[in-house]
Length: 257
Image 1 (cartoon, rainbow, N blue to C red):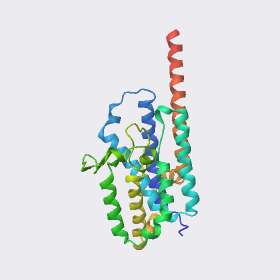
Image 2 (image 1 turned 180 degrees about the vertical axis):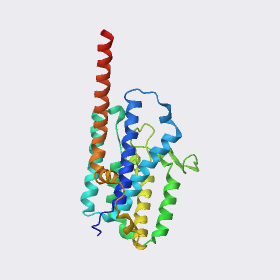
Image 3 (image 1 turned 180 degrees about the horizontal axis):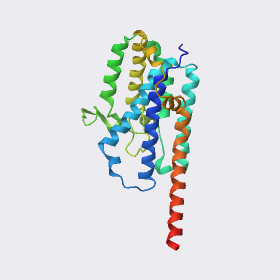
């Protein structure tokens, strides 16, 4: 068990968190407050969003081996994911979250407890290659295909896409909707890729290079990423609501003058 603090990892996580906050802030402006920003539906915005979530999931897999009380930690994160699903379903049913990123990370951590001994028998370099290839192969399963990006190699049976259980696994039924959807397949493979990358760093004695401070602000954000993730959307929504209500009030007063 490793008790050291790897500040570089905190900084990377903090940078991803900062990007996520900005991305979600723009999402609120476009989809809740009605701003017409077409770039947000562009390929560039999609790549930005994917870079954010890939970073979080890879880092979660990389840091899994550092954790203590893995069952408790994984169960707590999974529970938070379910609470967010319930909360958004009640408060914002049109923007509800089903099987979001916390549900995924919590599920991955719990599954890793079951399969870690098996994974440890695999050479880490081969593990990165295999899990990375499986992620690429299954990236489009949510859409009904094996493949990655615009490559849709093999169509999967429609019968696999039938209910919430299959949606949790990666095969959502046609009417399924979620504003933040990360199913076990393909994202578990990316988590495992991060796990094997950690094993490579251990074997090559590279972890010591991650101990140095870089940017303290980003490192602080990374150290408190879970707490910030939980509260950031309500805070952003409240700030925008207050800002626009004050702006409308000022416009009303000026028009009366």
